Length: 120
Image (cartoon, rainbow, N blue to C red; front, side, top):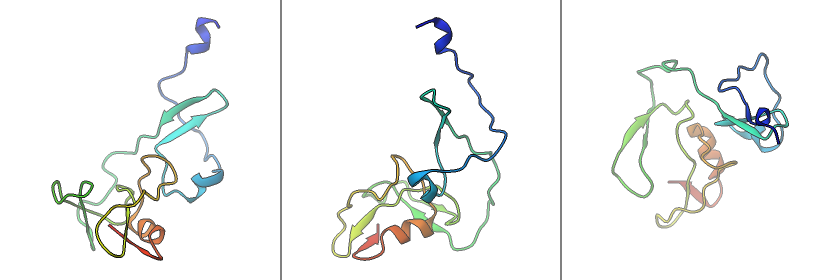
């Protein structure tokens, strides 16, 4: 292995939309992207300040199994996980993530919990 094999640019800008494959096609957004066959992953950084400060139908978000740190969020944005709870009780079941740390819109989270579970 030569030293040049470990040189990767710190920023990569994609010139075109890259088609999705597999489970990523069902995700609202991605947090990391593998570039080429290099095995190198890059974090997707959202543009700052592109969301409305005021919005309708805000949804309450909280930390796992707690009422601490409550915040209000726009349900159209991808800012939360999609935990589902059984219809009885409040024990959080495994996340319905397509990949670790996935963030979803509220409508996606509700769809993933349909059936015998409720969105926590």
